[in-house]
Length: 484
Ligand SMILES: Nc1nc2[nH]cnc2c(=O)[nH]1
Ligand SMILES: [Zn+2]
Image 1 (cartoon, rainbow, N blue to C red):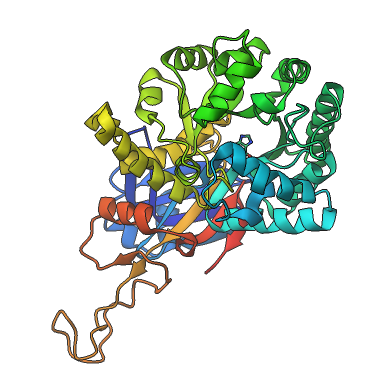
Image 2 (cartoon, helix red, strand yellow):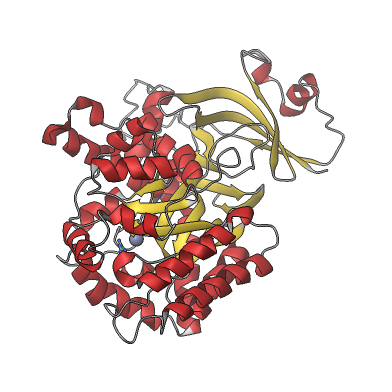
């Protein structure tokens, strides 16, 4: 069994508020699974960590006569669990940044439906999906819950792309049969809406026997579905319980949308109750946005065990409002982060994480109080462990623990050389002597001067990091993206 050993710094969320920083550690991975982890202080000493890698591994009891690969993590670099995007529309990727001054309902009609419907062209679909998934991987996303389009053929192309590029993911065909949808872009009947959903879920199951890429039931949102379609999709979700089949949809993103749902489903007392009526609120359901949920709806969602995908980048771009995340977390509702491309303008989950911090500050200052603020530790927990819970992958991905899958990223920060000032060194070293060589020059905007502690380095990464800081990405133990 081929083994890989990672030696150096690793960081992960241990709990919502506790970020574990292990300056010297070793992680042993084989067959894509984390087999053991050692930490300086627990299993060996600081001075042992200076031993040559093979000697250190032997000291820790590993049989290093077997075939093995060793990754030594350089200075100012660290391993981190892969980021998890709980809500992204691959089909909208070309529209990043294109939303003008529109809000949700106008944006859907003006920008979104025309682009999505154009992906019935398979060549165009493959090009768009490949670019989107590639960018997502380059930004360190190892798992993503995708919406494709209404077309089953186009949706299955996204499945193929995910399988080929190696990301873990869920692929949803947008079920949308309501006559509120444009005539040229909707399912022709409730029956077709359910049938085509079934076809896409089955396609994933057949195409990827490993289960890394899975289908997901996707009623686009209540206004785009008839009652019969919602009922049929609810049945499909119940039938899929034994396979752990998930469902994703949008909820209470925008005030006009909430009013629309009230008018369309007057028999239901709330938006969440619409989904509950059709058995779509389950522990396997991912609800995107939830900006305008009432107390009763939060209670209902909690009681059904559904999760919420918080999409602050999108909420800001489309002027949907700021979600009160703390209320959900305090109630014990599962919460993860979504980029909601292209409502959100960036495929980077780190952008969603920092926006979650900023949005929470607005919520706090808007009257909900200091406790509403989301910390760096919490934002990174939402981006990893929180997302894993929402997508039913708790204990499998989102952390670095024995038995978990090796879905991880290598983050590199830029060490600022000492001799940048031209005329001698700021620290008094003579001209021409380069002391900064140990910190590899990797580009990006996160400049490390050397006096920062690790908590500060992580905060600088969260607030200024981008794809240039993602040096390598592994999914299921496989290196799927490498920039070093
Ligand atoms: N943000 C967002 N909200 C939606 N509600 C229904 N469809 C969509 C969509 O594509 N994006
Ligand atoms: Zn969305």
